[in-house]
Length: 167
Ligand SMILES: [Zn+2]
Image (cartoon, rainbow, N blue to C red; front, side, top):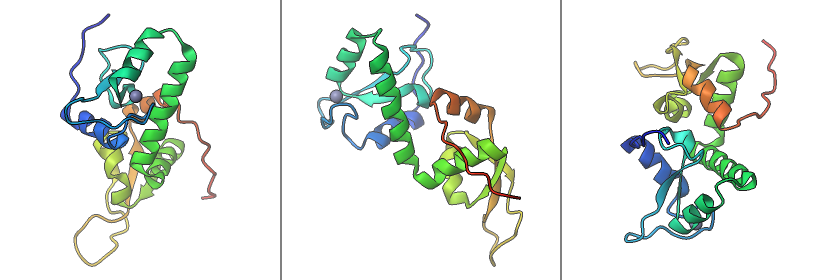
């Protein structure tokens, strides 16, 4: 097995935030004394990226490790992770990710792009192309998908269809 890679504070905060104190598999609450663990979904400790990590209780962690080769369990975990991400980021931002992948570039309000920007899944393509508003503040901006974003979409098995909007 390759070398274990440390999980960044930012990713750890996302992992904690998305489960809202409950094990996403069994529903048990995370206590102050019995902390949960960050499980590497594909069992490769050298890949400590957000998409490969899920915070779960120790009982569920033990169960997963015991049935390491069970494809059904792996598919279930991957589906749970995808659902957590979607709920955590919000449906509008999820659509921004889908659209920036589908169209290469998409325009949106910066507030819907912030979490995706922090995860480096999209980047600013052209800021403020419309100069909306009276003050010098960020408004509707063009965002494009990053290489990391494309890989993320593959790893997370994000495959929802984007409705084609005529241009
Ligand atoms: Zn659990």
